[in-house]
Length: 108
Image 1 (tube, rainbow, N blue to C red):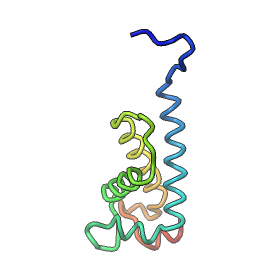
Image 2 (image 1 turned 180 degrees about the vertical axis):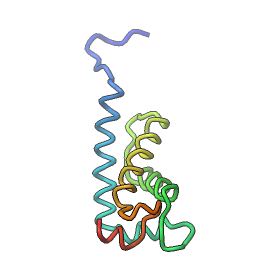
Image 3 (image 1 turned 90 degrees about the vertical axis):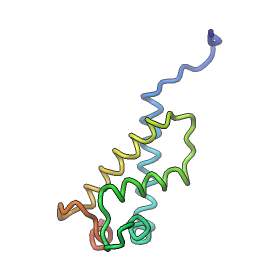
């Protein structure tokens, strides 16, 4: 099927980059505003700490609640969220234990 000549060309890499920045801003805003509450929600094992898997799953749930996907392919969306969540997680995991505690969230 031919596209009209004046139709905008989608550049998925640019869209993914822009979306990534929106996701990052949203995650950081939520984490800084509600970090302790989110950490408790993400802590499925209820041990007072959040593993990387728990954090990624929590961020994925958070992103599907509050963000418009704008036609982003699900695989791209999932990869962006996973990568950003891991980046934020490792930044907060100050002691390098592989888990984020309430103290580390407070310090972030």
